[in-house]
Every structure is written in C-alpha cells, then in structure tokens.
Image (cartoon, rainbow, N blue to C red; front, side, top):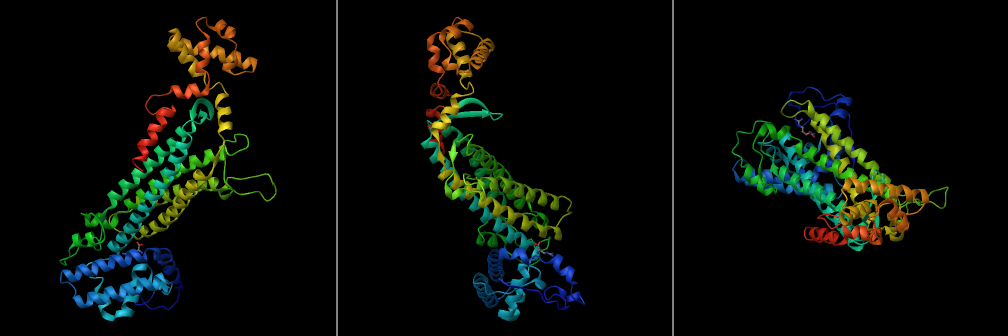
Length: 467
Ligand code: ARG
C-alpha cells in the first residue's frame, strides 16, 4: 500500500474551510496517523456502512445516496485489500483517506456520510472493533496453549520431577501437576479476555464529537448491526474512553508475564545441567561458533517480548492520565501501543504453544533430580507425626538431624541404615522406607489440588470439560 506525501500548501479538503493555508511539513508529520491507522480500514468501512444504512432508515439521507455510499465503500474495501489504494499523509488518517476516495468515486453523496457523526466517535468505534477482534483471537490462541498443556499433563500425570521453591529442591511433584499450574494461569488469562470482551461490547458510534447529535439517529440499530450488545450511555465518556485498549494491554501484560515465567523455566530446563527437556530443532537455534550448542532463542524472545508489552501498557496509561474530558489528540498515540503489543502477544503464545507441544521430556533425568536434595524430608517428618505421634515441630527437628547425617555421609535419606535412623529417634521402624521414595511421596499428596497422579487426573478432567 503506497503512501504519497505531496507538499502542496493547500488547506485540508475535509476540514480546511476556515484555513487559508495548509500545514507546515512538520505539522503534517506530527499530525498524521495514516502510517499506522490504515490497519483499521476494514473496521472503518464496516462502521460507515452501518452508519449510512441507519441514516437512510431514519430518513436522514436518501436511500439513493445510501446505496451510492455503500457501493463506494465496498469498492474502496476491495481496492485496499488488493493493494490498489493510494494512502495520502495529507489526509491525516484512515477516516479521511477513505472519505476522500469516496468523494472521488461517487461525488457529492459522499459528503452526506459524515452527518451525525465525528471522527471522535468514528475512531472510538473502529478501534473498539479492532480490539474486540484481537481479544477474540487471543481467546482462541490461549485455548490452543491450554490444550497443549493438557496433552502434556495427561502424558506425564505420573512423571516425577523436583518441585522447587526459591529454585531449591523442595518436594517431589509430577510434571503433569507442573503443566497444570500453567493451565490455571492461562485459564485465568482467558477469563480476563472474556470479561474484557463483555466490558467493551458497547457501540460508540452516534456519540458524535462529544455531546451527541440533534439528528434523529438510532444508536441501537447501529449497535446491533455492528455486533455490539448495546450502545454506550454517555457521549462524553464514549469519545474520551480508552479503557478497552488499556484493558487489552493489561491482559497482554499479565499473560506476557506468565509466558515469560514459562520461557524462563524452559531456558533453565533445557540447560545441560538440568536436562529436563530438549527443545525440538524447530524451536531452537544453533551457535555460529560452538557446534555443540542448541539455544532456546524462542523462549528467550518470549521473555523479552514481555518487556515490550509492559512498555506499551505504561505508555498508554501515561498518555491518558492527564487528559481532561473529552477527546484530545494525545489519544491518537493509543494505536501503535496496542498494535505492537498484540503482535508480540500473538507471537509469544504461538511460539510457546509450539515449544510445549514439541519438547522432549527427559523423565529419567527429572526422576533422578526429584530424589536428590533430600526432597522427601517432609515425608519423613509427616511419617513421624502419623506413625510415632510426634508433634510436627519435633518431627521437623528429628528429620533435620537425619538430613544432616545423610549429608555428612554423602547419601540420600533412603540410603541411611535403620540403626542410624533409630539412633536419632527410637520410634522409627523399617516401614519408614515406604515413604522415602519419590513415587510414594507424590502418591500420598491426595489433598484437593495436590500433586498425586489421581488428583492431577481430576484437574485434567475439570479443564478438558472447559476447553
Ligand atoms: N486520527 C485520530 C485519532 O486517531 C482520529 C480522531 C481525530 N479527531 C479529531 N477531532 N481530530 O485519534
């Protein structure tokens, strides 16, 4: 799509009535948004078709003019889609580029389209429609990512791995349980997306510049035609509100943070030191100098994209925070933030879905790591509480002594001879060895939401029914 930049000093053909000369070149450059808002062409045309149809229905324009307008707009739509539309920076934005082309195509009838509306409600409409579609796309993509995790969780409901706190081995868990933690996170993100769609599902068109209009328009009709639940209720708020964009960005930031935590885990897990997972060739890169390397670049970039998304959220919050009601031109800066964040989020979800689906899980390596670091110490303490009637605090102390002894001997808890354990506490019997294995440890954690394979399978079934 070409963009022309003529430096003719004539005044703007849309609003130049009271202007003797055109804008300075710098004015034109700072003012124009066509470079990025041309992305809104389809939404702009849909909005204009609905508006013109309503104007004719209400007798505000003639059916004949409406037909010409709608036909012209459809011609413009195919011109833009096929790359045969010349965008002009002198015409500032997508709204005036399309209207000017309409005038060339159909003549004076084009001038009737802007009756009972303003670019203020027009841009609010176009942008809302765009964000709504993006949220719907995000919802689908999150569903795909959740499905990838559900499959991996099912496959690994019994695979034992170390669970961490402070990135120190804490207690054995299953890899399936760990995968389901991400299902919960992305499930919350998806429900935030659904709420955001509900919040923005109101049509701005007809708020006009800020005060509404004296023409007998039907805002319920345009709302319905454009797929909104209802029209917005306050025309001042309508043209000054960008909450829908900020809400999209905040959801993107939260989801990006989740994706980044996952990325960080993948980076750690795929190191030779951990060796828990191996990324597929499709989602890793080699080094130009070190032939042995396989780098998790996609995961690292997902981690980095989160920084960009956070930047966009802070940018738009800052753009909006000082604006008096209603519309101010500052608000034109909303779009690039949202477009950039949307692109980053889509890429990040797609890359993560691919990585999760493709990665090879090294269950032997995970199991070996699960047993190291005295990960079943809590199980020993719990056994002392259950079988020997010790208060938990005392059991904790006894277990601490057993860990210290094992550490000094350079062995695992399960490798300590019974005599050694009995020297620490006489109530210990050889039954204790049953709980010191990682499998017994995870199988025992059957509390609701716990890591036992039986519980993980319940969690999977719960989410399968909702995905
Ligand atoms: N390009 C503008 C924007 O993105 C459209 C609205 C312009 N309205 C105005 N009164 N100048 O916000």
